[in-house]
Every structure is written in structure tokens, then in C-alpha cells.
Image (cartoon, rainbow, N blue to C red; front, side, top):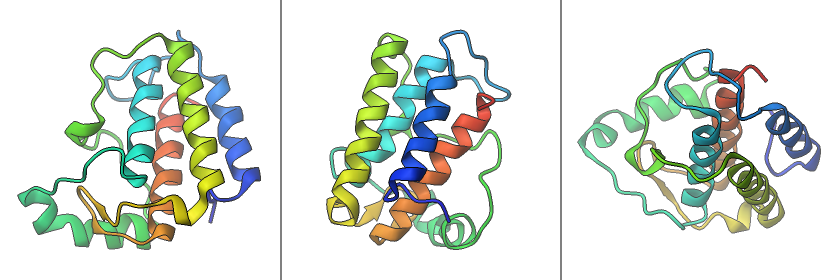
Amino acid sequence: MKSLFKQSDVEELITRINKVTPESKPHWGKMNAAQLMAHCIAPLKMAHGEIPSKRNLMSLLFGKMFKKKYIIGNTVFPKNLPTDPHFLVPNPMQFEMERKKLIEKLQEFSAKGPSGITNKVHSFFGPMIAEEWDILQYKHLDHHLKQFGV
């Protein structure tokens, strides 16, 4: 399994991130390229405790089941999943600035390693250990980079 705690996997993601241009169009969904960059920063921040994890009724009812399927299991994320409101970025800053911030946050996540994950509860999936956060972060980034064809 790929990991944000492995530098070679992080470098691969950065190479893919750098292939996205401001003109890149998604194969599905409504985000533009700048929104993609800003959106992908938020889950990394949540893992580090910079964004609060507030659970709602849907997460309490279905989070554990979906965690088993998408994080513990090997199921890929389907297209057009609903987005956590914490991760919506309607008016991102400039594309290059957002890309730079995403790469910096990705490198920070990798450098801090498992001990940098201070949030023990995801807003949808519920209680998570560092390895589960790592799997989720990689799958999330991979999903959205594929959305933009890279």
C-alpha cells in the first residue's frame, strides 16, 4: 500500500500534482483545478488537528461501515461522493499559491509521520489510528488526481 509516510510515494504524488494546470478540467465533479488544490489540503489539516472533526448523524450511522469498506478494505472511492462541508472551498485563492500550499502540507504530513496525527476521530469515519489516516490521505489525493487525469 502506498503511504504518505514514504518519501518515494510523496514524490510521486508531487509529480502528479505538478502535472495539473489551471486549465485542467475534471473528468467528473464540479471542482476546478484551484479548488482541487485547496480541497486536498483540508483533510491533511484535519489529521493534524487544525480543522475540527464534528460528527453528524450520518457519520454515526454509517461511518464505521464505510471505514471498513474504503479504509480497511481495498475499495477505491467512487466518483461524485458527497463532500464534507469542512472541505468545500468555493472561492480558492490563486492556483499556483494553492498548489504550493498543498505540496508544503503534503511534505509536512510526511515529515511529521504518525506522531504528527493528533486527531483521533475523523468527521465521517469515526475513530482512526495513524495508519488509517495515512491510507485515507493517500486514497483521497489519488482519487482527486485521477479526477483531473493525472
